[in-house]
Image (cartoon, rainbow, N blue to C red; front, side, top):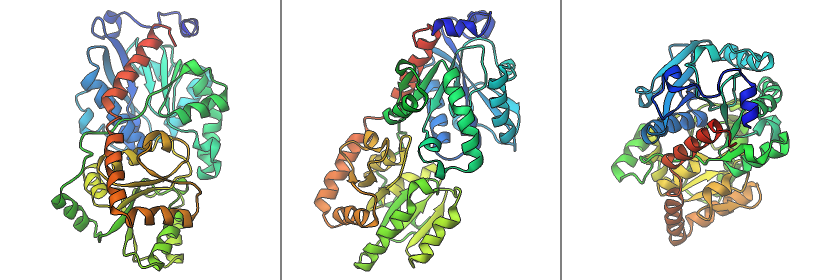
Amino acid sequence: MAERIRAKSHAPAIAPPEESGQRPGRLGVVLDAGPAVHQSAGLARYTESLASALWQHCRDAIDLSLFYNRHSDHQPPSSLAAIPARALPMRQHPWRLGVLACQLLRAPYVERKLATGGIYHATEHLLPWMARPSVMTVHDLIFERFPQHHTLANRAFLRVAMPLFVRRADAIISVSRHTKQDILDLYGTPPQKVVVVSEGIEDHFRPADEEEIQRVQDQYAIRRPYLLMVGTLEPRKNHALAFEALARLKAEGWPHCLVVAGGRGWLFDTVKSEVELLRLTDDVIFTGRVPEEDLPPLYSGTDCFLMPSLYEGFGIPVLEAMACGAPVVCSRASSLPEVAGYAARYIEVLTGEALAEAIRNVLSNPEAAGQTRLKGLRQAERFSWKDAATKTAAVYNAVARGRL
C-alpha cells in the first residue's frame, strides 16, 4: 500500500505541517461535504453527522477541512459552519462527469483546488484522481445487485466509475459487513483494503413526549393509530408490499393508516398508483420529506415501523425508530440484520401476507410489543457517531502510515 501511495506523486504522501497548513502533530483531512450541501437523504445524513463528529471528537488527531462543489446557492448545513471549507463552482452533472474524467486521465484538476498534503475522503461514490492518499466510503452497490432500481443513466455511469474508484482509493470504508462482501465479490478487492465502520445515531433520537407527538400529528394531518415508513420513495424500499399488507389489515377491520415520510424518488407515480389501485387513498398519508427535528415524535407515535426493503446499504431509519421506542418490522435483506440485531421482527418471505402477519403480531400483543421496544432501545445504544468518527480517524491514520 505504501508503495502504491508514493507512486502517485514525486512529493511525499503526507506533506509536512508547515507546507500543508495543518497544525503540528495532526493529520490533515479534506472531506467531501457535497452530499450534506446538496442532498437530503441518507448520504447527506451520513456526511453531515460524520463531519460533525470528527470535528467534535477527533480534533486532537486530525485537522479537518471540507470541500464541495457549489451551485444553486447551496451552503453547508449550520452544524458544519465552523469547519474550514473550500468550494468548486460546478453544477452536479458536470461535477460527476468531471470526477470520472479526472480519474480516467489521471488529471489533478480537483487536487489543485485543495490545500496540499493530508488525506482526501470521498463520502459518496465520487472520487477524483488524487496525488495524496484517498479514502472512499461505499454505502451500497444497489446498481449492481438490483440494476432495475436505478435509472439507466446512473447505472451506466456507476458501472464505469465505481470499479475504477474502488481500485484507485487507498482504503474503502464500508458502512456494513454486507456492503463489504459485495465489494469483495464484485470487484475482487483485497479484504484488508475494506474497513467496516457502522453509521451512528444522533442523541436527539429518543422517545418524545405526548405533546411533541401530538404537535407533529397535527402538523402533518396524521390520525392515530398509524404505521410508519421513512425514506425516499423509490422501488427498492418496497412501499408496494406495505400497501398490500395494509389492505389486508383494513379488510380485517384494523383502524390503522400508513404514514409514508420521505422525498419523492424516481418512479413515485408508480408508487402512488398502487395506493389508488388498492383503494387506500384515505389510509395512506404522504407527508413528503420531514425535517429531522420532526422525526423523533413521528417515530415515537407509531404503533409499528416498517422497512420491508429489498436492499439497504445500512438502514439508518431502523436505528432511529428503535432509539425512539418504536417496534420494528423489517426484511432480512442485505445489511438490515446487522443493524436491527435481535430487536426486530423479521419477514421471512417478502409477501403482503407475511408482512401483514408480522404487523398483526405486533399490534395484537401489547406485552410482546413492549419487549420489542425495550430491545430496540438497547440495540440503538450500540451505535454512535462518536464511535464512527473515532474508527474513521483510525482509517485515515492507517492510510497515512501505509498500513492499509
